[in-house]
Image (cartoon, rainbow over all chains, first blue to last red; front, side, top):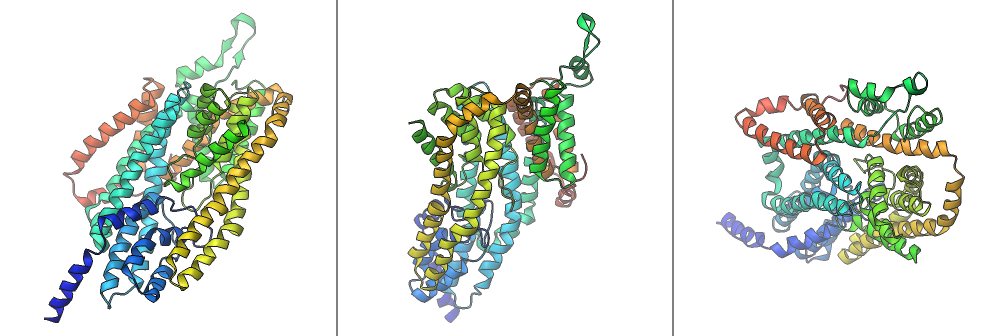
Length: 281
Length: 257
């Protein structure tokens, strides 16, 4: 009898968070990382995004204070996935507001366990793959002096980014704590990583051939009978020098060389090659 | 007047962080705007695209902090256009600026933003959600947005004339060298990305993408669409396999190229 009553209360309370509340979170989660700092990183951003919902769930100042403090713990994520974590956290907070036995530690545990894997996927998906594809297409337009390149770049990147934000928030709220289990059980995350990896690699391969430019003006022999080196290289394989450069830099990165050092080496190398006429612009 | 435009463009660039990391920071976006402000849209597009490629690897992944691309992109493109130099010069100027501003930005992150975020704790203690909200915006606007936008503008105002003279004094072979480096630097970006997403099982696709363009001259868009088609084929064939099978194909191996 009592449990039935509790269920009823819960059901009533479940509808406390409306579509409008979630949309409010959606907009609040856009400036997620503006107050980023070293120690707790995106913690104020998280608290800001969820504070509207907390205000509604905890009319009591003391409860609200506890909830705010809870969400001012360390947080860091690829921001496109922040709404997903927010959705799940909101579902949990809503439960906590109605259920006295709810362990609030579990909210932070879920947040902490989600941010790592989601950041890994998010970084390689958005910053590693989608950004490269969008930039590749945008750059190929912009190189011809076409300002549409910038617009195409922004659209290609942001339509999926905003879709992930929106779907993540609502699905995260809907599935609550079960979400991650579901995703990892179905192997969906791995599949997504692998498929986007294929797309990323093919585009990068294509871009190495078009966007890394190295040409040598070197000749053998004197006067009109001189043999140019570049056509010989091209007959071995087109874009041979760009491929070699990419491979060498890749190897250097594997040797844990800092990108800034490599960057400077490239500039120095280029100037030396220009001075001796080994490479031409 | 140009200075005002540059300030507005910097404001647009840093809006990135307020609109959900929409990549407004990128040189490919800011380049055309700078070109427009300085009366040469075409050059802005072209130079912006080159700087974009050179700074491909400069993006915040994980905890690593990248060079600050807004300042580097805007000032690099602007000085190159003013000095009638090519994209190589924009890269050569933009990169050191981006690194320098990254250091300054770190100072903001360490010393200024925490002034606000620490107060958020006090408001949370009192149960004052509005106070927490306010600190989020203050931290973002005063700790990051305005200082950086103003810094870019001041550098532009100070550097425009001086930079033009300096650029004309640089010997030809250094200018050529910088142009050459603008052609090589994208390789660094691609190598960083490869380190991130490469995986033994799918490395063949990298080679396919390269060969299609190197030998068959297929444009990047064509390769991306082809990749989409391959993914569709794989998705349908993969559905028949067991989950275990998939899990095995996912071991990431970084050391092979």
